Image 1 (cartoon, rainbow, N blue to C red):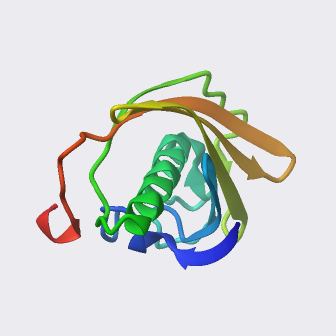
Image 2 (cartoon, rainbow, N blue to C red):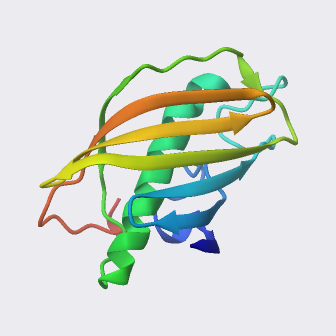
Image 3 (tube, rainbow, N blue to C red):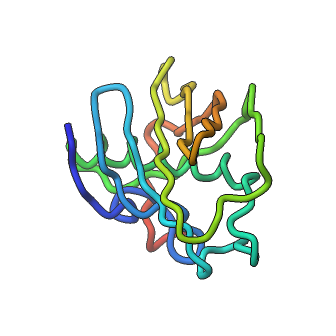
Length: 147
């Protein structure tokens, strides 16, 4: 389903630790987020946003996906943990200023808060991909005001 929602509404972060702008697509097993590369982003350099931030872009898209699903059940955004990543390849050092990134996440596995997501960032003629393992404690409720 195509949507256009501010991602910050679905993740338990506040500026300057917000790295995705909008949630633009959502489905039962995944989501797509968008980010405009701009100088006020944390870690941004003259050359642009370092691609090593890709892990956080992917993790926040997973968080927005989880937060959106949780909101459908009346929950506030919950804190989650990045456990690890596999198969991350960074063919370029920076995302250039003014460019728009699309970040896709697709749930591969989810059981009792432990999940794995296939993630991909579209940038120019590159696709940066990785598998992220995440954990969202069950029964634990937190919100932005308490972080």
